[in-house]
Image (cartoon, rainbow, N blue to C red; front, side, top):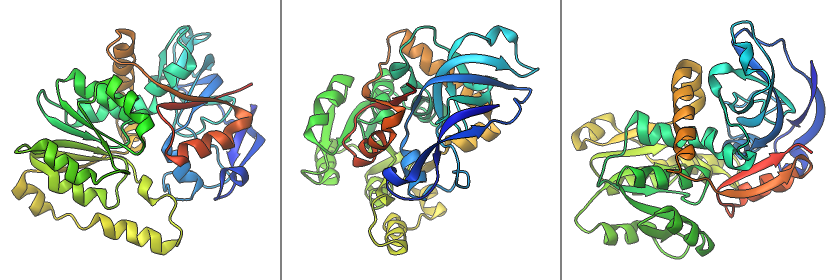
Length: 342
C-alpha cells in the first residue's frame, strides 16, 4: 500500500534533510501488524542519523523513527485478529516517521485512551531505561548512580527507576532550568556541568564512596572521567554518543571523539572488577525480541501503577518536524518530544 511519510533525503540541517513524500509499504509479514499512526516520537539517534553519524540507519532516502501510537488496521496471518481496532504504542525498527507503519506484534502494547505524548516516552526511551536498570545489570538498593542528560527522555525515566530501587541518584544537567524537573523526579544531587566540573563536584559528594553505575549517552571524554569514578562492581552503561554531534572539523572531530574515549583493556576491567556495557536496543530487538516485548510491558505497567511518570517536552505538528529536531539537537529539551500527524 501507499502512505505518506517524512523521508530523510540528505545529511545536514533539518531544514534541508527531510521531505514529505508518498512511499510504498511492503506486504505485511506473517508476524506483523499494520498501524495507522496518529503520532511518533523523536530520539537522539534520529539526530545522529540526520548528521550521518548513525551506522544502523538505512541507506538514504529512508524513513527513520523508532516508535508510534496509533490504531491497528490489519494483522499478519500469525497474529490474532483481536488486535484489529486496538490503540497501541509500538516500538519500530525504523519507519516511525510514516502515516502507516509495520512492526512485529511482539513490539506493541495496548494503551487505550492514554495520551500519545505520555505514552511515547515509554517506547524506545522507556525500554532502553528499563533494560539497563532492570535487565542487563540491575540497580541495587543503596548504590550510587550517575545519570547523564538527566532531564532527557531516558534520563528522566532512569532517575525514577533508580529511586524505585532505592539508589542514590546524581543527576547531571546542562542548564539550571532543568534542575526543578530532576529534583521533582527524585534526584538526590544535581550537577550542572556547564557551571562547574561535574567530576570534581561528584568526588566531593561521594566522599569515601565510589560510583556504582554511570548511565552515559554522551561518550567522548566523559568515558574516562566516569571510569575513574567507578568502584568495584561499577558499571558504565554506554548508550549513545551525543558529544560527536556538532563537530566542526569533519573527520578530525570524529577522531578526537574516539581519542577522548581512550582505550579500554579487558584485563584492566577484570582486575578492577568494573564493567563497560554497550547498549544498542536495535541489536537486542533483532536477536532477542522477547526482551523488547517484556521490557515494554513492564515499563507501561509501572506507569499504569503510578510508580513512574513521563514528562512532555514538546508537541509538534508533522509540518514542524524541523523545529522539533532542532529543539532535540540543541540540548535544551526536557522529557519526550512528540510529533503529531495533522
